[in-house]
Length: 238
Ligand code: HEC
Image (spheres, rainbow, N blue to C red):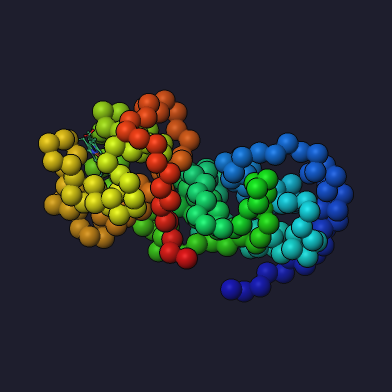
């Protein structure tokens, strides 16, 4: 990718960064979700220097500059592709040592990858995940609306069928079983085998989208059903 001419901006931001360190340290430690929401806010604002508040204050200044620069590059790429002002946070998912921030507007998904520490602050540069994943998420969200929404509700909040955002499951004990339920259904229930109705590619997309719903904050969520199981779903293969 073309290296952006942001040296001047980075310099200015570094100056702000030095002055903001004390402020950041006294700030309340937020959740990973808050980090995601704040990152979206900063991406949409004309004030990218605010990213500094989201970075772990303890890490060295070179790393901070690297994070800031990566963020500015991502912001620029996103602006070239879509209307960032309409972006919202879809979900934040932690997978191994990486944190994935899923952002979306009505036309696009973006997935930002970074590392965060126990204080839910950024400690590494940000990167955009390849479009294969984001295109599949968009496709999956469309299939979800047509095929799953009527029973599982908006964003998987649950209606006559179970909530797909919480970590309580009736049938699912592993990533493979999630795929299995969606492909083969559950005999004797309203959950039909979607392998009979969707192409393998469509199945893959809707399965990926279902995984991305895990832990999502939704309003009026249906109360948990089944047992509490913390299953780690993979959005990307690392
Ligand atoms: C006609 C209603 C209906 C539709 C449409 C539907 N489901 Fe379901 N689904 C159910 C019901 C009901 C259950 C729970 C069955 C039970 O309680 O025994 C279920 C269960 C599931 C489960 C297992 C949940 C658990 O707790 O183990 C997953 C995952 C799931 N559905 C995903 C999907 C996806 C993805 C789609 C769209 C491709 C979809 N469902 C479409 C009714 C539906």
